[in-house]
Every structure is written in structure tokens, then in C-alpha cells.
Amino acid sequence: MIEVVDLTKRYGKVLAVDHLSFRADPGRVTGFLGPNGAGKTTTLRALVGLLHPTSGSATVLGRRYVDLDEPGQRVGAILEVNAFHPGRSGRNHLRTLARAGGIDERRVDEVLEEVDLTAAARRRVKGYSLGMKQRLALAGALLGHPEILVLDEPANGLDPQGIRWLRDLLRRLADQGRTVLVSSHVLAEMAQLADDVVIIAKGRSVAQSSIEAVLVGVGRGTRVRSPERDRLLAALGREGIETAPYEQDALIVKAEAPRVGELAAREGVVLHELVAESGTLEDVFLELTEGESSPS
Amino acid sequence: MRLLAAELLKLRTTRVTYVLIGVAVLMSGLAAAAIVGSGSLGDDGWLELAQGAGFSTTLATIVGILLVTNEYRHGTITTTFLAEPRRVRVLVAKLAAALLAGVALAFASIVTTALVALPWAAARGDALPLDGHALEAVGRMLLGFALSAALGAAVGAIIQNQVGSIIVVFVWFLIVESIVGVLAALVFGDLGEPDPVSPYLPGSALGGIIGGEGSEFMLRGGPAALLALGYVAALAVLAAFSMTRRDP
Image (cartoon, rainbow over all chains, first blue to last red; front, top):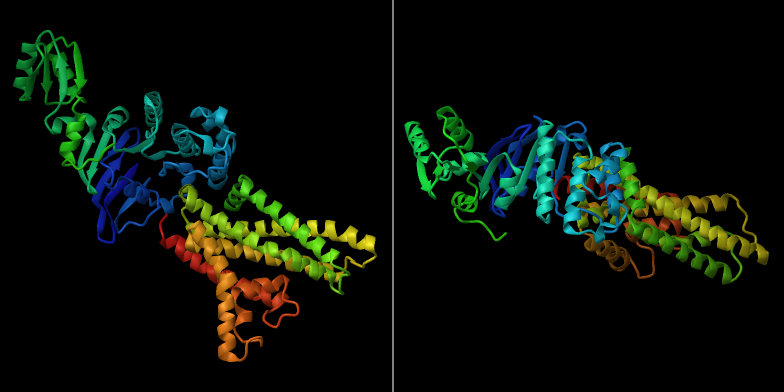
């Protein structure tokens, strides 16, 4: 579990993180979302002891990172896009990490295989593409079979297939009971990767919940298509749930998809489609962060 | 211990380490050839040879600087601190790795010097016996190279910027200490006379470990090594502050 409580980091007059609190639970992929400069990286660096908070706390597994036994085997993290010596091979990079973290060197070849870098393992990192570097960084984070993963913008530089691969990997890791905290400034990525989201702007939390709930909370919701639209409308109305028409046989419902689905099942209404509406995610984001997003 | 192993692996997996060892071999080989070739060796031929090879201590300082500043330059310091968040331990491992890297450079220089000087001197009939003088020369070389590398690592950890560290160290050694020497002479006596300041500066202390024979401006051997060790220790304390206070 990751817990951030009242975290504040001030650089001179700039308040990078302002009394931020949130938690990330085991078994979930928690997205940490915000425009560039919102304080995401500062928060994540404070979490793993790379910077000293001005006040408040950021703990991993109930402790400060520096107080963990064998942090290299319990927490895996990516905090820099390109933290490699360009002249060292990918494999040797991982060997130095394994040695420092007290991790069996056999893991090096395993993680290289996991991120599909075996063929390039003995080449110097200088010649790697951005996507390959991201995968190498991920391999480094996975070395110690960590219970906790803290990944700053891991999807940066990945192509659509890479993002899908990352999503599947993070899903698998979360399903194994690990805690996964992953940051991004790109919403579309987050919608694909995360179960829960923490949205921050100007160092402050502006929303925290499941992705669906965030959408619903600001007026978007679930898109539902049914041949028995009117019966569904009546049932939703009885529950006091707001609805809005959408195409001829579809509705936008201001409720989470599971609730809509369960209600329809109880009422025996046939559904043809039940979608957590994410087409308007960008609008939600802009609304929440008060338009201070930056070009992605 | 495993942090030291990781640091040594970092050294072994970058090319620049081998390039610097190669340069040390070349420099000490040339120096040995120049010294033996210039005529008969004096009573203490080994020490003359050691002084020739001693120029390569600058390479040891560079290795020490790179050992720390490469990590800041390439951002790998974050992964290093993730593996060991207690930064003072990282610093200790790096200082130890620098000492060992210095020893390796000294070893390469000693072997090269011996390989060039021994057969040549023997062929010419010069005596170059493997006696106490030889042992002293080897000891001075090992100390001089190891402390030079450790000083580089400590300065690198204080300044953290690679180019900045290299410039500061060499400007200090080559320019600042000379200026201080001149000023000290003006204040305390005459130019060309020994003054009470310049022998105790870090550069002349390091230089005196191997060299210093015949110079009134330098300490020699053991005292020089002790003073240099003191400087390295003081810089290491500053480095510990700099590394723990300044977040990467």
C-alpha cells in the first residue's frame, strides 16, 4: 500500500505539492493524473526518498522508503525517462541494479525476456529507441519482484501496441496483489491503464475515485444502448438517476456502469451496450484541472 | 559490500575506465623510457621512475570524478539511491571503489614501468635491484593513485556536475595553488624561498606522496600521504552533506 498524507513540497516561493493526500491499494492500478508541472513527479520522488518533503508524509508499506528493509526488493520504480549510462549495455545496466539491490543475477535475463529485450540486451543503451529505454526501465523496476510499483510516465514513448502490452502487464501485476501507481499527463493512456485515478492540478488533489466515478461526478457517465429504452428510462427514473438521450436507442446515464447493468438485470431490460463513457475524458480532465493542461 | 561490488561493476562496464587505464599504461611507459633513456639512473632509480609514472595520478582523479558525476549526469543516481536510500552508504561505497580503481591504475603503471625499465637497464648494465627502494616506490605509487582517485570521488560528490568538477580540480591544482604559493612567499618571505603555506595545500600533499624529492615546497612520502588522507577525509565529510542535502 502507498499512502500520501498532507504532503507538501515547497521550492522557494513555488509550492510544487500542496497538502496532497491519497492512497493506492494492493490489487489495483492507481493512475496519478495531472498536467505537466502539476506536482506528479515531485510526489513520486518524495514517495521513494529521492527528495525531502517540506511537510507531511509519503509512505510505502507503512514506512518511509529509507526505513524499508531491502527497498530494492520490495519497491520497483521508474522516475527518470532516460536514466542509463549510454555506453553501458542494457544487460549490464540491470546487472549493476541487481548487484546493488542484492537480487539474484538470474533475474536479469528473466526480466529482459519479460520486457522483450533479450535480443538487444548486449547492445549499448545509446542505440536504443525511446520505447526500448522505457522497457529497460520497466525491467529494472521489475527486477526484485516488488510488491509496490511506482512508475512515472511509463507509457511515454510507447506505441499503441506497447501501451496495450503495458496495460496487460500492469493488470497482471495488480491481479497478483501488487500495488501499482502509475502517472501520466495523457488521459487516454490512463483510461486504458488504471482502475482508480487521483487527479491533481497545481499540487492539489482535484478528484480521487474509480475512473468511471470521476466521469459521472462531473456530469458524464455510462453510455447504454437498449432496444427497450423507455422501460430502462422509467427504471432509472424510479431510482432517481439522471439520464440524457443519446442517439435513438441509447442513453447517457449519470451512474457507474455496474449500477446501470445491475439495475437492468433486476428489471429484465435487455442491454446491447454498456460503456463507461470515456469519449469525453479530455473534457473532464480540462474541467477538473481548470484548463491548465499543457500540450501533450 | 554489495554496494561496492555494484560500483566496481559500473566501472568495469564502461569503456572510459579501460581508456584511462590504457592512457596510464602509455604515459608510464613513455615516462619510463624517457627516464631510462636519458642516461644512467641515480641511486634511487625506482623513485625517479615512480615520479615519472606519477603524472598518471591525474587519471586516477578523473576516474574518481567520473565514478560519481557520471551518475548525476546520466540520471542513474536515482536508481542507485532507490537500491540504497541511505546516501552516505552510497558515498562510502563510491569512495572505496575509487580507492580500488586508483590501486588498479597504479598497478597498471607499475607493471608497465617495470616492463620497460628492467630489461633496458639490465641490458645497459645499470643496477635496478628489487630492494627496499623498489618496495617504497611501489607503496608510494599505490597510496598516491588511490588517494588521488578518492579525492576525485569526494569532489565529484560535492559538486556533482561533471565538467564543473573536472575544471575545479584542475584549476585548483594547476593555478590556485601556484597563486597561493606566490602570495604566501610575498607575505612570509621571498619568492623562491620555502613558505609555511604551500607545502600543506592539497595538490602538493598529493604530489608529495610520490614526488617531492629535492623540493622545499613539498612534504614527502608518509607525511604527505597523511596530509592528503586528511584532505580526502575532510572532503568526504563535505560530500556526505552535499549528497544527503541536495536531492538529485
